[in-house]
Image 1 (tube, rainbow, N blue to C red):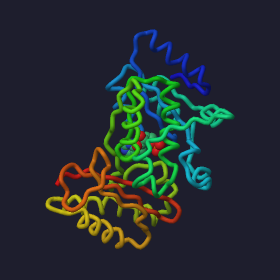
Image 2 (cartoon, rainbow, N blue to C red):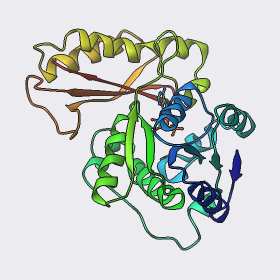
Image 3 (cartoon, helix red, strand yellow):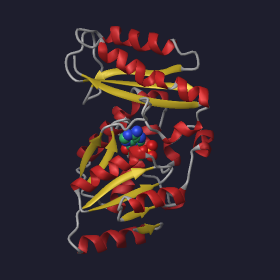
Length: 280
Ligand code: AMP
């Protein structure tokens, strides 16, 4: 496994694989890896010959520096997991590498970035698309895999790749969960034991909504989710969006096709998200 910290080293590692005729898959991450990330690596490996994983805690997608500073990191553990999984290249750039001094180019999906979760976290998706576009330009993968857990992010990335004619395929991979249903997240380790238990309310509220989806209106689902989350005093419902699954367009009245339910719930200063696509 090649560990690269500069753009030149990363390009050289990828070029060496290309010279052997290998196709390249990519999994962008912010590190502190868990089984969710590793499932994306496996998916990338089934579609390509060699997989590159980037580890970069991207400052431009964090609203508050406190959240950025608190983001968990464990590079050695991450490298061990990636080595064991048979990853070919790991790219671990410094902030100055991804954002060279004097840089001024951003990439933004103008509609999708500034709706739904993007309203809760202004500038977040602009930070994501800007860094992912830069990472794609460095690695130039054939395929990149993103988790459905970050559902709006997945749709935003697909839109960016289509709009900019980027020559790669984006694949979405299902959410990997703890045994009790909590979606795996690097942020989960920051939860107190009480909040960790309370966090089950995310998947429980989605299950409750799914159970009532047939024949339901958007208002019905809003109520089911809000009422379920309200039964957990430690949880604050921060965002709830029920939209057309692919376009993220809002729906009025009854559901009429694949529908994404996206929720964000705060436990103190820790924001967790979850999502489910339901078919009425
Ligand atoms: P992050 O390191 O949180 O930026 O996540 C990197 C990638 O892993 C993103 O594409 C996420 O959607 C994906 N991911 C995070 N958690 C999970 C999970 N529990 N199951 C599947 N994919 C995930």
